Image (cartoon, rainbow, N blue to C red; front, side, top):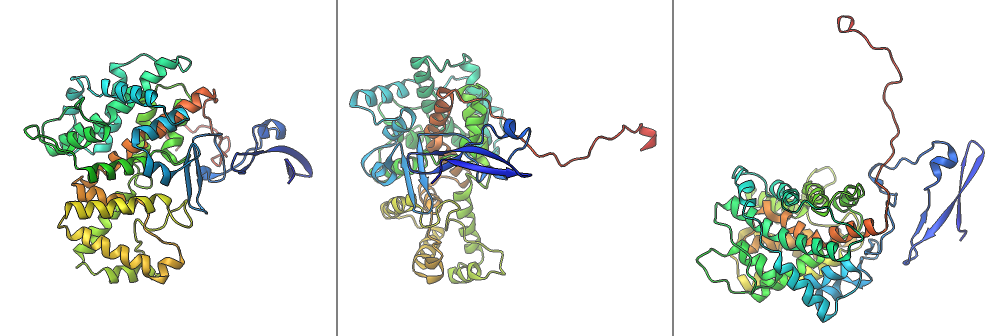
Length: 428
């Protein structure tokens, strides 16, 4: 293959270098396009064919069902590692030593408490405010209590900012959850690890002693690992472009939360539960909805099956299915919705229509089932997603700043009115 791509416009040829990634992906380097052609740009709505950056964090091959963080396969990390260890890997580039992991865990624990004045901000929200709106606002509000800008060249300063962000977002999430339920806020405990603190802050009353359910803790740990990063999706790209203005880490993460809130991005597992509720409300006939999904003239679509990126199977779903099965067995939840979900899964995995089209249950299907079984309200699903995606956002922000990437400034193709004269009000 040539290392040059040629573009011909009006008989004139322009040459642009081809760039190869470490996994043999090929990109056309168009940085000089506008200058070389005197103003011509590419048009790619949604940036489906445009690489916005070079990144060493996540490799994703949707056709082959591959997902790797820093070169490590997602199934190996889920089996052999834990969320904080994977977070360190994704953020800093290598698996931590015992000493590095111990420091990371200890530093995060030291920052888990929130300033009590954060409660005043939280109290200002109405009880029915959406958790994602509160999470985004309170994440941005952290800048009020830590207003100093992070110098990206100050290694220790960046490290402390990263640990503070990792520490405080779960506490905010748990307080938001308590606010919605009208319950007193729980505080993080130094004796608990990262996952245990999330579970005890969300699900334990103040007058109760928290006891770890290992099956539940492992399932949540796996869920968070599977959501750590997923290449340049909407929220991740948002974090990078906001951070490219040299906005602080809290502000950049807040923008990612807002992007994740959109139903086309982070709300997929919520859509699964809403679909299951609709099936039950209609009488619970799963076969009826399976047939509706097969009918091209019917607008109904099965949520949580297939994936826009993974054309074969979602590698995360294979891992989290085991966790979902273990949680349902451990908790023995008597929930008709979960029974419908299991029936739907069995049919879809065996029906030739779905098998031939590779419409397998994806990670959103199983994560929705797990959160439902744990008693997480459906409006909190995306908040849980945000906790998992947090280290990925941090890693992308740090990488972008260390690479000294320029401020994001997409171009546009103007299709509005040409120049026209102003009409006075009485002549319109």
